[in-house]
Amino acid sequence: MRPAEAVIFLTLAAGLHVGAWQLAPRIQGTASDGGPGTARLTLAPATPRLAALARSWTRPPALGQAPQPAIAKRVDTPPDRPLEPIQPAARPVSQALAVVKPDPLPRSDRTTPAPPVPPEAATAAPPPPPAPVKAAQPPRLQEPARRPARPAPPARAYADKSRDAAPAIPAQVASGGGAPADRKVGKKGADKTQSNTSGGRDRLLAQWGARIQKKVHRRLIYPRGASGSGTARVALTVDRTGRLVATKLLRSAGRRLFDRAALNAVARAGRFPPAPKGLSRDTYTFTLSLAFRR
Image (cartoon, rainbow, N blue to C red; front, side):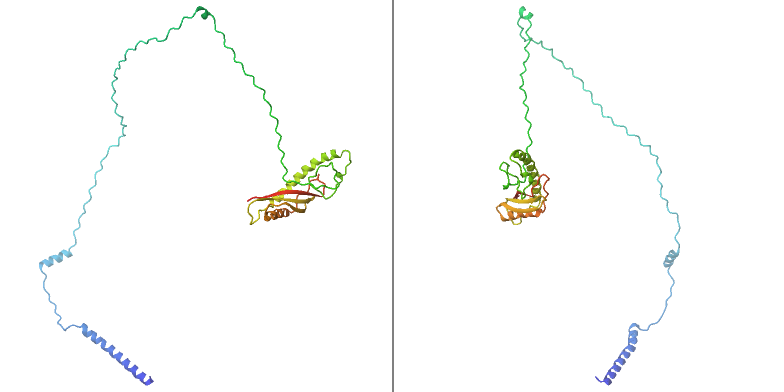
């Protein structure tokens, strides 16, 4: 579109809007105005009825006293009398009927008369009954005192025959690597000396073995993947300081997992308690039975 044409069209549009705006008031005024008429006012006097009605409207209302409500008179009521307890009605006294008791019948003595007592029997008194003889009670036998049972040692040690041991010496509870000086005894009095010392060594070995077995049992663990039960027999060699020297499986538990767990329990125990002072050998061997139960 050219600029000249745009100017022409804008001018025409503006003119149309201005013309419509000028014509709008005229049309509106023409529509609202009515036809031309005459302005006249007619006056006429009011009728007596309307005048009386107007006076009644303008007359103020008569003020009168409002009726007071009637006040009820106060009536003094007598105080409440305490209620007297109601006594139950007396029951009629029943006339006692005279009961005529029959005359008691004479009792007949049905007891048979006692036979006459001869004069001799009446004079002689019966002899007194003999006194009961108490049966002699047998003397009570004293029960022998029971001896307390000696507890069996939990750990057992097997003996290895030493080359330099005398034939009269009993089997040793544990085997040792060294040769102590107390084993060299003479031929005379050797049996007596060994019998006095063997009992003390056995007791010390049993106490030491129990402590070793207790420590191994604390490290005993049921293996994973195993089932059932079994008992493995293990031999372990310990020196006097409590150090583990060697371990050996003497009897299998029937399953490799149980045997391996028994040897591992001994190895995990680490260092054992040292030997008592009465044991002078360098090493001692103990046998332990390790049971596995599910």
